[in-house]
Structure formats: structure tokens, C-alpha cells
Image 1 (tube, one colour):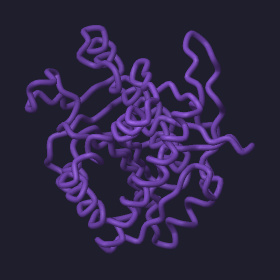
Image 2 (cartoon, one colour):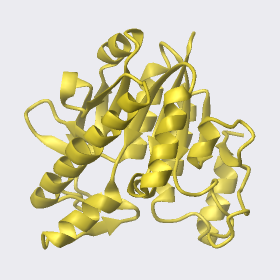
Image 3 (cartoon, one colour):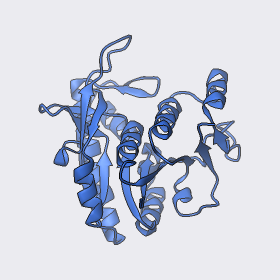
Image 4 (cartoon, rainbow, N blue to C red):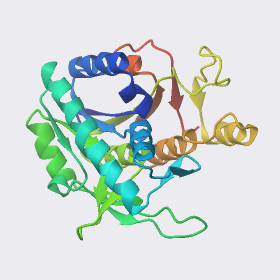
Length: 259
């Protein structure tokens, strides 16, 4: 099977114009087929606050009311998605910006209310690999934002890390998929104030130890959960680190392992 790289970038990368430009240049020259997944959480939160809409989070996941969903759709599927797509075109990478609703790429179900009501948050139920394969085979790089739909006309906010893992998992039936979580750090850090304290590898047992110590918390929790799920369901490799790791194989990063 051919290799397929699924790369997810975080909000802090998107917010820094220089870092984003450097990342997109590196992505455009990355050999082989690829899919880019992005959120834009920081910008969405700033926009919501300017509009007087409260920002509510729980364990790294956003609680999405109706007004928040409108902001997320504007920011993720509009401004951020199209700017990234335009930049990739400028670097010679033929890209198409899409949400989960476009081409029916990603359907999701509204998250069941348990202890917390996440509002219009969606959990991925199906990935349309046929349409994605058509785009990839045509030499097009899909740029997927973190907005899905339920197939009945309702848009849903879905965690971008989850989308990246779901795409990598579904496409692993057709490709040798590798998953890269790119953010502003060089990897998962033992000490958030020490940039050189990158943890080289994390397996499930070590993850639980780090979680209990509070080393891994907040937004890193769903990222690790998604990483392990991806590996358990067909994805060949998962890495967490800065955007430099997609171009420089010796760059510092954290590799997620099952053993």
C-alpha cells in the first residue's frame, strides 16, 4: 500500500503567521499523498468573546451552544480553511478546503448527554473514504476543518484531533497511514516550561502514570486518547511535535506506541 500522511495542526500554529507560513511551505514539499486537518480553537474563542458569547471548556473539549457553533463554522470552515488553502496553492500544492459536510466526507452524531452536555458537539460515525480517495488519486490535498454534519442538515463541532485520527483509521484500509499532531511544542513535555524536556515515547501504561501526575492534562488528554485509538485500529505510526518533524526526520518529537 502507498503511504498517506494525515497532519493535524493546532490553533497556536494557525495564530502565528510566520510559523503557519513555515509549516505550509514544509507541507507543500512533503513527498507523497497527504491530508491536512485543522481547528482554530484559539481564534474561535477570541471571536466568540468579541461577540459576547461565553467560552466554555471541559477537559480540553469545547461546549458548543448554538451561537458558538455559528462562530466555529465561520472561523473554521470559512476564514481559517480558505486562508490555508490559498496559501498552499501559492506554494504549488493543489488543495481543496472542505468541511465534513462537503462531499459527505464526515458524518457524526450529536454527543449523548451524560455528566456534561457538550451541546452541538459531534462524535464521528462515518468517513467517506471513497470521495477522499478520489481527491487523493487526482493529486489533490484535502484540507479538512473541524466541522462535521449529521446527514440531516445539522452541522456539528468535532474535535480536530478526533477527526485526524478517524480519517487515518478509516483510510488505513486503503493506505499505510501515518498520523502527525503538529503544535507549537517539540513534543509532549515532562515540564511545560522546559522546551527540551520532550518525552521520546509514550505507551498506554506510561500515559496513565503521566496523567495521574498531572504532566498530561487538558487538551493533551483527547489528543493522546485519539492517538492510542488510531494505533489500535490500523494506523501505522503516530507522532506529536512541532511542524518541523514533517520535514526533518531527526527533529525532536514524541512517538506514541502501544507497547
